[in-house]
Length: 240
Image 1 (cartoon, rainbow, N blue to C red):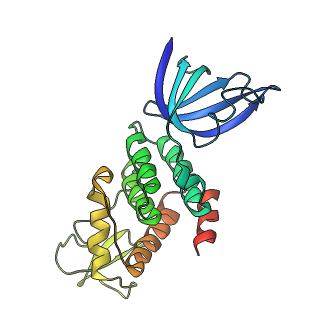
Image 2 (cartoon, rainbow, N blue to C red):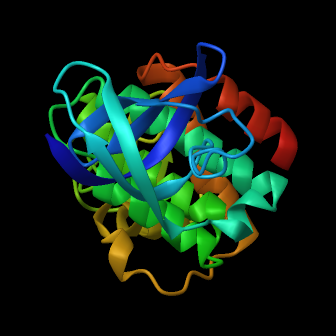
């Protein structure tokens, strides 16, 4: 059955001497596709089946089996991201993270994932966008944060900090020398969680606040997710 489907290539592998297999992340999940002759110099697939190609793929679709590629129509070449090592590293990380989260969720993450990439391509802050996505993915990992009340007593009053070890907000009455964060950090971390990524057109946050949110998420992911991604380690070294 010939089918057109939008997606992003997240992996490519050799297949014989002249062909390759690509893994495309799509609204219906991960699809494996054979690209016949894609490694030959004259093949139209040579340039359109590279990793992180965002396109509409016309394929002879076979459910639960390898499909066959017929043609590719590029949607966005992602030129800005691919020409910047830091942006490319963010893309590599959120792609690896998305695939790992998708393995643990029956719901599609595709729309959030692609929207984040396109916002990054448009020039918005990649760290903030990545943190927003990381926060939203916690629900799909089954370790969502309670951002409405103190994690210890349930009070919604006088929240003074957020702590990764305790797993959420801490109020003044329950505070026991945990590291304090800026009040703006508490406000924005809630905004990150509830904001629709599609609605974001401009982001301006101080480096201090952005760093506090990122540090919290790094610690929370490390403690509760069990995900250890090489792409994240590389990214952290790059932006340190």
